[in-house]
Image: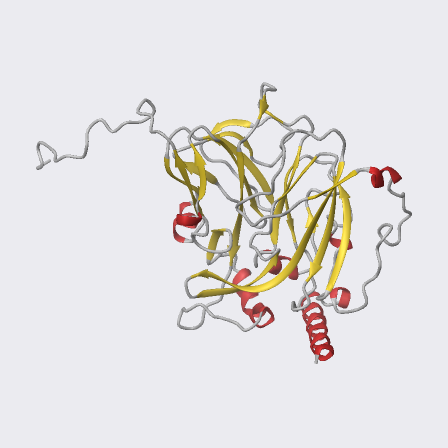
Length: 386
C-alpha cells in the first residue's frame, strides 16, 4: 500500500508539472545530482577552510518571532546550519474560510533566518512524504543558480542540502519557485519567508552612530486569492491540486480576497499580539513576496527605516509610513515611549481594515502626559444648536 501511495503522488506531481509548465522538468523523474556545482559549467571548488569554520545550529521559530541572535559581528565567519521542512496543509484564513497552504516549517510565512555578513548558510530542506508537489527555495540574498532554486528541487519524501555564502547584507525574501505558473501559485499560497544578513560592524544611523534593538518581530504579509461559488460563498477543496484551476482564475484578476499578516486575519492581535515595554527598541522586519505594502505604526513612527532592506546603508529617519516593494523585505526600528495597544498595519486602509493586513503591539509602562494628555474630557457643546 505504501508503494502504491508513493506512485500515485509521483504521478500527480508529474501531471501537475506537465500541465502547468508544458514540459516535464519538474515532474517525478529521477533528480539530477548537482553537487559540486551547476551542471554544464567548469567548477571552482570551495575553499577547504570552510570545513574549519565554527558550525552553529540555528533554531528557527514561528513568526512573528525571530530566532535568538546577536547584533555583534562574530570574530570569524561561521557555517550557520538551518533545517526546514515543507508541509502542504489546509489553513483557516478566517472563520469558515479555508485554503491549502504550502509552508516552510508549517507556518505562513516561513520562519525568519538571521545570519551575519560573511557567514555561510547551510540549509537542509525536507519535502515531507505526505505532500503531493515538488518544491524548492529561492533565496533573494544568495548568488547564482536562481537563488539556489536550481539546486533545491525536492519531491515528496526527499531532502536536499545546499550551502551558500551570505555576501550581501540586508533583509531579503525567500520563496518557492518551482517554475512557470507554479511560482506565483506557490508564493500566494504562503510559501515565502525572509532572511536577514546583519552587516559587518552592525547597524548604524546616518551619522555613523551604532544602533541596537531590544527585540525584533517578523511580519510576513500575504495576499490570498480564494475562489467563491456562484452564490458568493468561499469554496473548500479536498486538496491543493483540486483548487488549482479555480485559484489561477482568481489570481489572474490581480484582486486579492485577503491581505493578511501571517496566515489569517487578526493573526497577531489580542492574546497573540506582539509585546513591548516603554523604553524598549523594537525592530520590525517586514516582507511582501508578491505585492507592494505601506507599513505604518499608529501612535508611533519609523525612527530608522531601511525600506529596501539595505541594512549596511544609512537608514531614513523619522518616517510616518514607508514602502515595502513587491518581492522584497524591509525593516523599521522604533523605541516605544507610551504604553497602550498600538496597531501596525498596511496603510492602504482598505487592505488593512477590510482585508486583514494589521497587527497589534501591546506596550506596558507609565503614561507620559508631556507627550500627550486629554486636557478636557468629552462634553456637550455650550450651544448645541450650531
